[in-house]
Image (cartoon, rainbow, N blue to C red; front, side, top):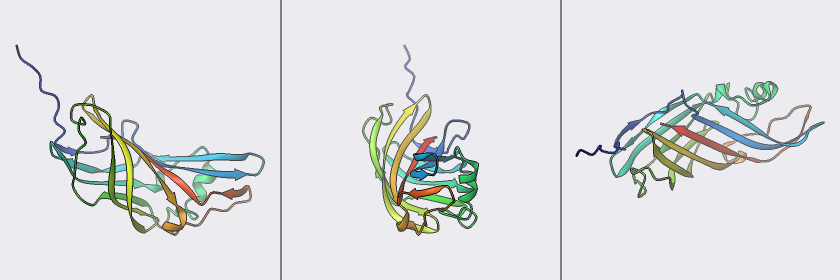
Length: 181
């Protein structure tokens, strides 16, 4: 009898944008005539690579195209061009792992695992050291990585957007990611 080998996790993994790969945000805002709501925007314009051996994450660099962020409001999306994230000045955001790290037990065998990625996040032209908690799983030949991190706007020199219908916006937001590699 022969046994089929499980797929190797070693190699270079790239975002599959034909799947539901995205980077995005969630920010609580209060709008006139609407009240408190959570604004959600996402971009599938995600590029980069993740390099792994059988036992370790060697490097990772993921770039998000901020100019393609879309929410449920074209007006909000247009305002982000020159306010808040100012994608006209800062068209991309980048997360880069800064040091190799061992892979969590079970990842190569298809188990869902939790870990924290340490690296540098460049957002709005400002680079900061961050730790991003993620859950990862190897499934059907794809590496799926999901996580989020709270971003304080002041840490990245982001001013809150303003508008006639905007009564208030929190001073932080959640950066979300779902990478299907």
